[in-house]
Length: 137
Image (cartoon, rainbow, N blue to C red):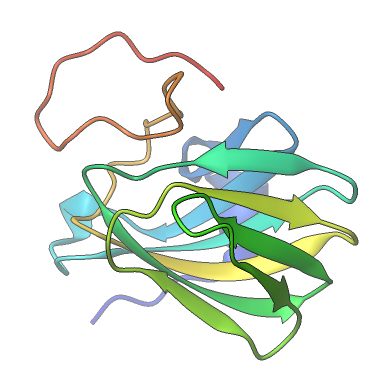
């Protein structure tokens, strides 16, 4: 059994807290936990806009707090994000995520991330085991 306290991770395990351009993510479960997925609590700053495309991962996201929107760049369709809304990037969907208010999101990635990833210029993370120069976006 794995039991972790979000507050303890934030206070004592800074290696599990990842930050990038106007977002931060507390990595509760990572690849080395052996669960087959990773689980994060992610914060997106109010007024921020992010373009992502997880070419090598599937992601599901549940909004716990805040208000924003997500636009599917393939279809142009925009969906409201608010508490209780979940979205799943089941086609490695390139998208824009906008935070009208600070968004607090619970996220799962498959395959799991290691905790050291940063977004590459195209908005993706490297595939597991891929050796690449990582670039913040």
